[in-house]
Length: 274
Image 1: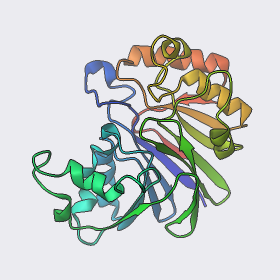
Image 2: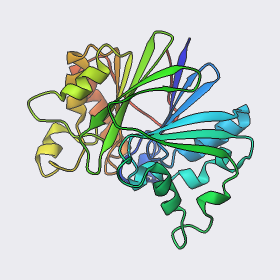
Image 3: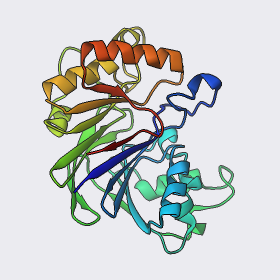
C-alpha cells in the first residue's frame, strides 16, 4: 500500500515567522504518514495546527501520534489540534521515554494546566489513549502497521521510529546527537535499507564542533554519512536551526546535493508518495 509523507513543521527549537523563513517554513516538528485510511502523526509541534485542519476537512476519525520526545517545541501545537476537540475523534498517543518519569499523559496535561493554559486536557472531547513504552520495543499501531523503535541520544531521552507498510519504510530520527567518528549502531539498525530517512540536521559539522557538543542534535553531513552507509533511498534534512534563514538553507541544500544526489531539505508543505 502506498505511503504518503507530509511535512507540516520542519523547524527545531522554536517557531519562527519572519520574511526570511517563509520558503522552508517556520513551524516546529510535525510530520504525517498516511497509509490508506491510517494516519500516523510524528510529533506535535506548531505544524500540528495545520495538520489538524487538514484531517477535519478530510473527515478523518482516528489517528496515532508517535512522540520523539516531549520538549516544548515538539508538543506546543497539541492544544490547537482541532480533532482533539471533536467527540467522535479517536487519538492514541505513544512515547518511549517517559514510562519511569510520570508517563506521557502527565506531560500533555501539565502544559495545559493553569496558569500555563486556560483550558485543561480534560476538556478535550476526543477519545484519547496515552501509551508508554520503552524505546527499542516494537509496536503495532492502527490496522497492523509495524513500527520499530530505538533509543536516541538526546537530553531527557528521545525515540526514533521506523514505520513499515506495504513493503515501504519511513524512518523519523530526531532529536539525536551523533557520535563523531562513528555511526550510532542503534540508528544504523533502525534505518538500514529504508526508503526514506528524516534526520535531525540542526547544525553543520563546523557549527557542531564550535560549541554545540552535548546539545542533543546532529548535522546535515552526518545525515548524508548515515544515508550512504545504511543504503537509505532518500534522506530528508530536518529540524532546521531557527537561525538558518531561507538563504542559508538554500546554501546548505546546494552543498548537500554536491555531496550526494539522494538528499533533500525538508520544506513545510512538502509531500512524498512512496
